[in-house]
Amino acid sequence: MNNYFLLNLLLLCFQLSFAQERIIHGKVTDSAGSPIPYANIFIEKTKTQSATDLDGNYAIKINSSSYLIFSYLGFKSQKIAADKEKINVVLEMDHSKLLEELPYIPHIRKKKTQKIKVQ
Image (cartoon, rainbow, N blue to C red; front, side, top):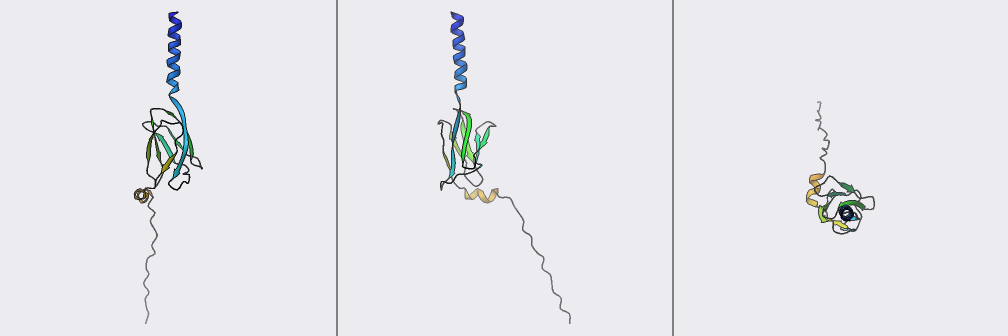
């Protein structure tokens, strides 16, 4: 009887350890409501990441005690607790970082040629 109780207790603990992981889904949009394709989604303090599809939708497997970080070029990053199954995110433009993140492309200048007058 004692072994049967310990086995059930062990199985219950095993199931509870897997119950913490779940799939969170949602949509990432800008302030105008347009979807942001290929926005980055990171789980804080891990190497796990995902990205949105062309319609701004995402799905990621996460522990309930973790945080999600949403980011995209030219937008302010957001850190959100993973406490719901559906999390929709609105990213705001970050005009100050936009120019810093663009690659530098030098333009080509033509040299001035001097015209020589012959008399």
